[in-house]
Image 1 (cartoon, rainbow, N blue to C red):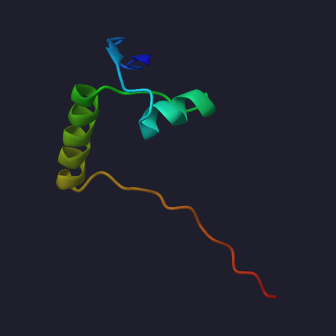
Image 2: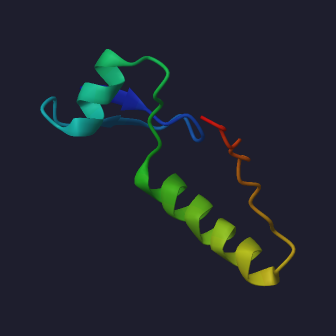
Length: 66
């Protein structure tokens, strides 16, 4: 299966029987990101977390009185 990275537009070939390929076929909302782009984003996110200025906002869960 040929896939295209959403960030760098590099076209790669992946095996048709992998989980990623199945997700891309069955759910069009899923997008493919190549390994160098994934690693780059992971590294930058870790650097931002290390600065202390980066906060993740967790969704508030409402208590039900039932």
